[in-house]
Length: 150
Image 1 (tube, rainbow, N blue to C red):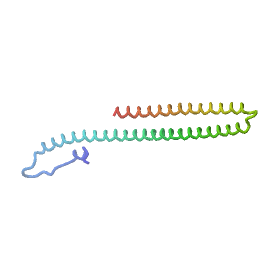
Image 2: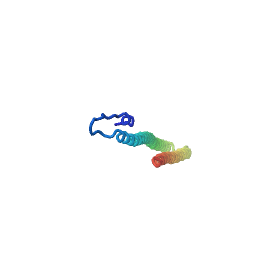
Image 3: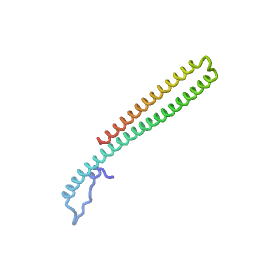
Image 4: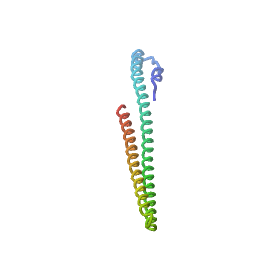
């Protein structure tokens, strides 16, 4: 690609007969050089903006990937907690059946306690999901605002 400096430094051979008027050629070259310089600078600015926008998109994509991974890990953790709580509840129930004479009330209390803990974990998971969703929505809003500014 030609640069404005290439146009400015271009010289033409002079012919002895029927050549172009040097002043007309030089005047035209000055106009071409000015227009070309303006387009050259504009192209460089647009390329710079495009590169910056691509970096922003990459950044927000990495944030989105991180948020998605966090959500996936949260679901896995919730499933694990739920499974562990269910197993523990089953174990407690089996113990209660074996030793129902004197300890039945005590075991029922433990079951109720574990179920309350499970419910609390579920509530915590809901709060966590809401927070992660809010963070993701905020990041998407920032991305959309950045795109609208450009």
